[in-house]
Amino acid sequence: MDIPSAARWLLLAAAAAQFVYAVRALRPALRSRPGERVDPWLAFADPAVGVPVSLALAFGNLTAFLAGMAALAPVLTWQLVRGIAARRGEPGKPTPA
Image (spheres, rainbow, N blue to C red):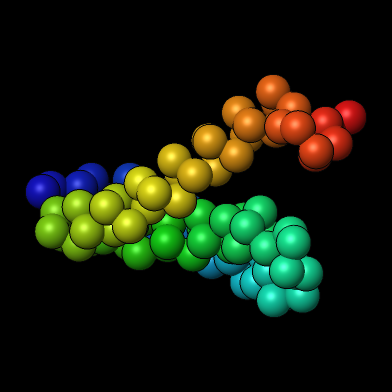
């Protein structure tokens, strides 16, 4: 893959921003209680897995990009499922305001 220089720098900046978000989300994930562990870990996993995906795309490594997307797809899918379930108001769970 041939990535233009400007796009490469933008992807590197996006990877750096995702790294910062992953570091900031790690502490709440580690402190989460047993009943509420999924959401903080999903908030950490999304940018943490996104960093290698952005770097692979920036350097034009299609194999690493596809492997990273294979790891990122379940995280994004589970976030979508939990978001839809929260909007519908699962029985026994309070609906968000």
